[in-house]
Amino acid sequence: MGGGTIINPDVNVGNNVVIGSGFVITKDVADNVAVAGNPAKLIKEINA
Image 1 (cartoon, rainbow, N blue to C red):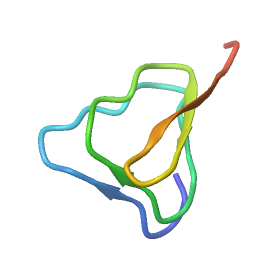
Image 2: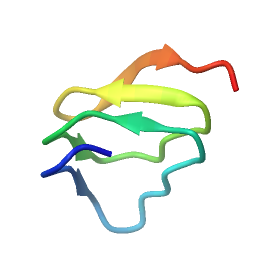
Image 3: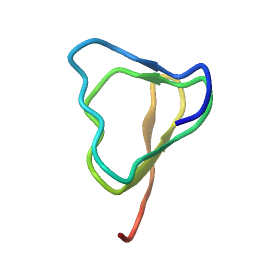
Image 4: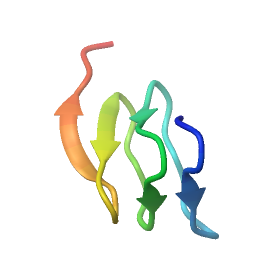
């Protein structure tokens, strides 16, 4: 997780997740993904 990232209350972040710097997480993030944007959106699935 990059610096300055904001995770809203009651939002769950899965395992093996990449989050860029300064992004806002407004919804649950599944396992094995990369997210970016404001609000954050799926950009890539990661093969674990």
